Every structure is written in C-alpha cells, then in structure tokens.
Figure 1 (cartoon, rainbow, N blue to C red):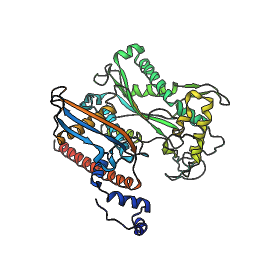
Figure 2: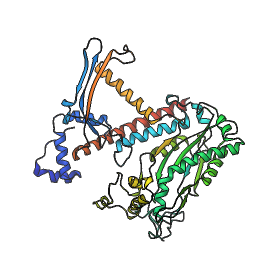
Figure 3: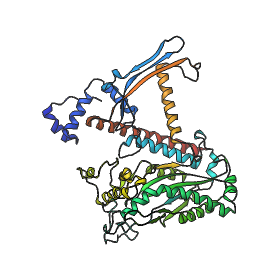
Figure 4: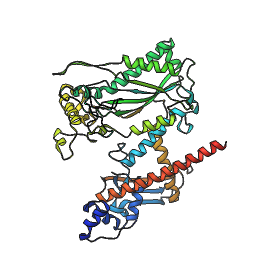
Amino acid sequence: MSLLPVAPAEVAPVAASVGLDPLTLADLLRVANAPGFDRWQEQVRRTGGCSDPIRLQGITTTRDARTGQVLYSYSTEGEPGGSLRVACGNRRASRCPSCAWMYAGDTFHLIRAGLTGDPRKGTPVTVRAHPKVFATLTAPSFGPVHNQPANGRCRCGSSHADDAPELGTALNPSTYDYAGTVLWNNHAGDLWRRFTIYLSRELAARAGLTQAALREVCRVSFGKVAEFQKRGAVHFHAIVRLDGPEGPDDVPPPWASVDLLTGAIQAAAARVSVPVPPADSEPARELRWGTQVDVRPIGTDDGQELTEEAVAAYVAKYATKAAETTGTVDRRIGELSELDKPTQLPTHARKLIESCYRLDEAYPDRKLWQWAHMLGFRGHFSTKSRRYSTTLGALRQVRADYRARQERQTRGLPDPDDAPEGSMLVLAHWTYAGHGHTPGESWLAANIHRDIRQGRDTAREALQDQLDWEEDAA
C-alpha cells in the first residue's frame, strides 16, 4: 500500500472526502510514505491488527554452544521506530477488537472441546455422550426497569426499540436498589462457589449416595462466562457436565442423566445464599440467585434445539464483553471526578459506580472502589473446572510453538527437538518501549484487522463447505 503525499493545504478537503479528520489523515500519509512502511505493515499484520500493541526494544542472538558461531542475530534498531510490536492480548472487544476476536476463538474451541470432545485438546470424543446442560443463573430484581416484555409495552407505557438508551434503566431511580445491585455483583463469585457445593449435595441426594460416595463414581465439570444485563447486574451462562470419577476420560454412572442434572441445578440454585452483614447505614442482606433459572439440554440430534456449536459460539461471544455493555467505562476509575470528563456516562451506570465508592467505606474488605468500572463485579469473565477440557494457556502455547517453528524454518535454524541438548544458546535482552498507535496507524491497523478477519472467515466457510460435501458423499 502506498499513498501519494498531499500538501498541507489539501489535507482538509481530502480528509472530508474519505471520512477522516485532518489530523488523522495527515498522520496516515506520514506513516504510509515513511521509510520502512512495508515492514511496519508486516509487524502489524503479525499482531493481527492489534489496536494497542506493546512496543519492545532489544536484541536476541542464537549461537552454537560448542563453537560459539552466531547462527542468528536480531536487533530492533533496524525496525520502524526502532521497536518490535507484539499483540496486547486484551480480551475486551471495546479495547482491542483484534485480540478479543482471538480470545473469543480460543474460548470457542475450549468450550466446544468439552462438548464434542477433541483428542488434540486432551478430551476424548466419548465425552459427547455424557449428560450435559446449558444453565443460566440470573440476579434477582432490584427494582422495576425499562424493558421489552412479550406484550411489547414496557411498564412506562412505551414500546422500546432494541437500541433504546433507557432499556435496563430504573423506572423510579429514587427507589431502585443500586446498593443491592453492586453488592450482588461483588458477591456473585461467592454465590457460584456455593452453588457448586450445593450442586454436589443435590446430585448425591438424588442418587441415594453420600457426598464421599458420589466422588467415587461421578464428577461435575463446568465451563462458564459472565454476562452483564442492561440493568447492570451480572449473570452466568454455564455448561454443566457429568463425568465418571476420573473426568472426561471416564464413563459417568448409569443413573446420571440430563433430567437428574437439571433437577439438581434448579434445587441447588434455590438453596444457595450469601449473607452480607449490616454496615453503617446499610441493612443486613441475604443474597440469592434470581427466580429465573433456565436449564436446557445440549445435544446434536435433529430434534435438539440447542447444539454444541451454538452453545460454544454463544459462550465465546460473551467472553469478550464486560460491564461496558451497560454504558460504563472499560478501565479502572481512580477518582469519581473522572466521570465528569467529556464522555458522559448514562445516569444509571453512574449511580452504580457512585454506589461502589460509597459502599467501599462500609465494606472495606470488599475493595469495591477498585471494581467500580465493573459495577462491583470482581470475578473473571471466563472460568472452568479443572477437568472440563483444555486451557486457554495450552491453546496459546500451540499457536506460539507453530509460529516458532515457522521462524526457525525461515532462519534456517535446527529444531530444538532434533538438535543435541545444550547445542544452542539463545541470549536475549528486551525492554518496554511503550504501547499503542498514532491516529493514522490506528486507522491502518483497523483495516488490516478487517482484511485478516474477512480472509479467515472466507477460509472457514470454504472448509465447512468441503466438510459438508465429504459428509454428504460418505
């Protein structure tokens, strides 16, 4: 890609014609016509079009340990800007669409492996026959909010569009329990932990076993994500599966069924509670799950509405989203005065954030101010039990190993697995040199990410067509 230089006086009209502000266009032209632009593009493409790459400076040298011969040497001095760009790895789509897209893909494969099995990811295909359900556990009501009921009309008398800004906000802010919402979000992880304990108890009771005997014949595995509703309360989507005592490699007992699992989940969710003691002007609370506990079987039969692919895609979609979907910010808030900056928050989100700071004095051990940008929620958005399937770290390592093999082949270096142990010595020194793009670089990186994503989507569709054709032919 090469853009012809534009005189300063011509920048404004050209910027207007392409939908860019003059400063961004001027910087775009500077970047595109600077020496080393092709190498800059190559770096950004290797990050997937990351919108906030980490810039590193340093050197690396590979030597033959026996002779001292330099096999390969690299320095960032010859790179554009004197630095090497690596992907930021942020999972939030609001912060980096490129890295979030990769995170969603990894989450999809992690969840799918636990549903259909994948020997390459350490999960046998026999796991597909294990009883499993898709459960959604929600928060209780903290007051009436604007919504889209089945009859089409909200309690306010209006029919809200899907993108209406008032959706999820309080009908009566003066009576809405903002403090309860924040405290519920903050204790949601505790509720889930207790839910898993009660679930084991319920399964044992339904099977006529003690909890110790249950562990000898059955194991509960799960993978879940958290999602923020419009009203600012978090809820969980979880795949819950029954395995044998050794995990996915082991057959579950004959009595283990989807119906038994469904009943146990509903009963456990109804029993769980987390007490919150009174503090200052705050009353004592008993936090519980909402009454809407949805549990649906997962299967691949033609009659099954919920397939493994659909569940994995649904979970992966929410793994890259956080509280910013409610209108709040996607970074930590140092002081409440930061909320007065040009980007104004919706009133509902602001009241929830202010409640975090107010409640922090009443419950200092909960560190609510640190999680104000998350409306009090302090858990991780994607978690799983140990034996559900592979890990995100393992998936990333496979990708890193593949790229390392490519690099060695390009440089003509031997594979460490083939070379004698200790025959190669790698010396490296790296320092942090900053992060992010200039406005023009950001525009180019976004377009590079779009092209990469479109290319991969096209390749994925072609592969699926080929698999469908082979299946039909068989």
